Length: 465
Image 1 (tube, helix red, strand yellow):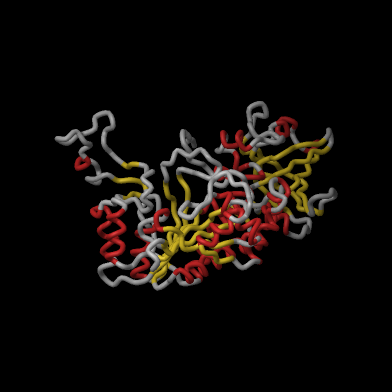
Image 2 (cartoon, rainbow, N blue to C red):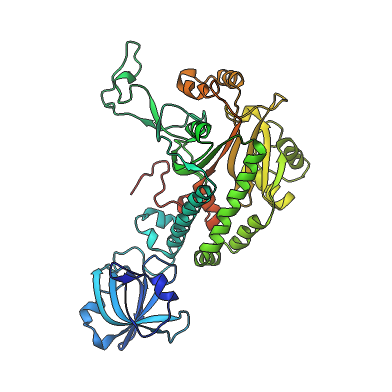
């Protein structure tokens, strides 16, 4: 299909050459040749592969050809023919070339050579033009589409939860404040504290860390909803696994207990990974070849294996009896670290694991308490290479238990009175979980750093572009 007077390179590479005239537009990856013929590798982002443009040098103005360098944007009209060289099925014999935008080879940063990931992060505005980030961003799109398709096809409703909020869903405290106050002249009350009554919302507000609490409100009316949007954590964590701005998928389902929640999480993850295997073949093959030789095998491993359901207490026992040397200690009551989670998945069971029934002291206030008084109906889905990929739970539907837990943790009731009210009027068993979109993409792409699966990463001291 012609778009903007062009045919996408992805379509040209799959079409049958019949000597037809075609127009391609894109960015020059490389140009090579001799005094008689030039070969231009052209890419438009529609596919990882380039199409080769064959140019009879004697038919074109020398000044025009000099402007066609790596990074330049051009239009080529010519004849689509069977390729004479190996590596591609078809190529274009150029009849007419127009240079939309040149790229000075002395200053254009993306010349034909290997670039480090650190360097590419510094030029994040250009890195989508590389093979690696083209592949990552196409997979990111495919996964976002698959998420919406999965939930839509199963009767879920997409709920837009607020990005600006007065509540802290996780009780984590690491939140970005939102204010319109003049920070050079902050109004104070009689006790010397910030007078938020003069702020835009009349009270302290923050960027959301999760859409879950509002998601629960939707589930207690529409039965099954999901959120998919940006979330924000002001943690000063400079690690390959943390971002200050990232995307979360959070389904919430009325009448689901923990077992139903586990079934949904397993089915959802397998669907997404199968979708990637079926629809992102070229990009996955490139990433497997360039970055992670085991990537495709690991994706198949998840799709082809049933997830193990494992009680936290049993998991701790396995780790303590393993004889393995861990950097972080293991004992009942401590949260598991990535190394512990990966040991259970990669060494012990050799399958993905869903760990359930965690100690209530290390989990959030809203999780349903078990009869033992010590544990809650939490679940974490653990994957090879990355550890926890999903965290969720059955939610506490009992008003008195939830209110008591809120008081124990010192959470101000005035901030979440509306959430508690849902347990007063027509409360119901319900469950949900959160999937960090970038964590999923780390797994699906095999990339080693979470900053490389989002177009413009936000991290401590970095909000460029």
